[in-house]
Length: 116
Length: 114
Image 1 (spheres, chains in turn green, orange):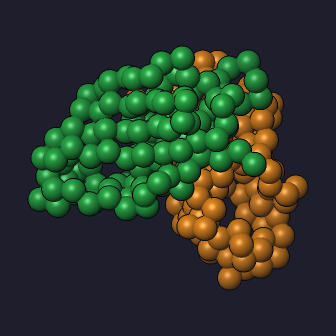
Image 2: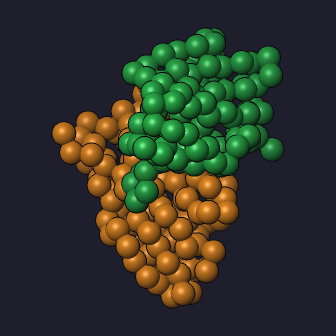
């Protein structure tokens, strides 16, 4: 069935390093790919999204790359800080026009630990 | 502006009982989605409501139901609880007409079924 999955379940980095979190997806029909961050005891928090007709998008300290050829999505976090420690989820959405409102398909998540 | 508010935050029920969870979206948001989060299955979509109508539904049994009120507040209900229903239930809101995947989540209601 349709799924969005992650290559690595855990990632440990030192403060100040750059982090790269990867995700593989299987649904070529998705319009948007999104990254969420979930801290312990909190709900997921939107980080950044990218539309399927783009291959790169940058935010504040984050960059998302989309490779549709190999159905791969990545999140790069620059100068990682201890406050970045959380579980990171990739997700996909088919966008407006279909029966997709509010319906995201999430990957399993990657635990990012940043050591001071 | 206040975020998404979910109540109760924690609750314990026994098998066979039913439970109602409440969600107040961000002011001005008309779409409310519900998700179930478990260690084994991750985050799974339950349903989405917009203007008091269920617009989208996930693959959950009929024991899971929801509704939305005219003020956009939403409730979800789970009847005849099973042990496997133990989970964090998350509510998320959005404007509802520009669907990029950006949802605003509450902190969740943690349900334990004994």
